[in-house]
Length: 286
Image (cartoon, rainbow, N blue to C red; front, top):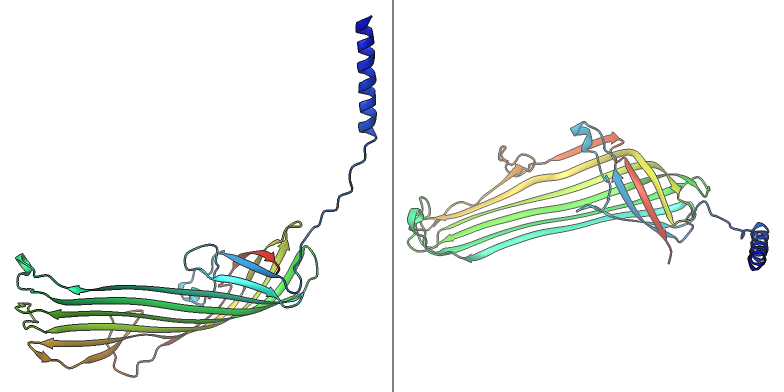
């Protein structure tokens, strides 16, 4: 009897629970399909180079291939001046320097006679690149976004190095034999790059996240100015100062001919699809 009563009670509880579940209504939910940025919004931009021309000469027209977390890549940002006009900018700053300076010890053995003296060596490399640009967006879709734009590329770089050796007393070097003999050598190279790039591209906004992925490609024009290395050589041999030599080398071929004052060097490159890149934008606002 007890078992029958227990079975009936369980059946009633199960029936009531099923009735409650079958009558339940789901909460209303709205899912956004995009998070299109508006005036005042900003974004961090990352680009991945999809490869350019296999022609090495044409490849020299490349300006900005990407900045996907690699050393020396640009820092790139966008600001929505209005819903359809975007100001973009990329910047790169780099400096590398080294210095060696000290008094030389007396040597023995094969180099016996290289007595003391001072040695100094310096090397510096500095680069500054600024790429301002603008975009015009055509579609107001909350999913798909098409735009065109233009970039101005301004790059400046300097490389210089110095080697200076002053010999001590009693030196028996093949050339420098007296105390105070000097061998000084320095190089300096300046580069300026000016470029113009026109791009077209699109973005696809992902769900309701502040993220979009897209693609950019276009045409580049690039002027490379400078690229000549100025060399200064000065020596004091046997206590007598030699004539100071100043000449120029082609920085792309430092073992080439020596040039006097008046050496000019420039280069122009233009090609399509030199900066084809996948783009990731992460949006935010103040």
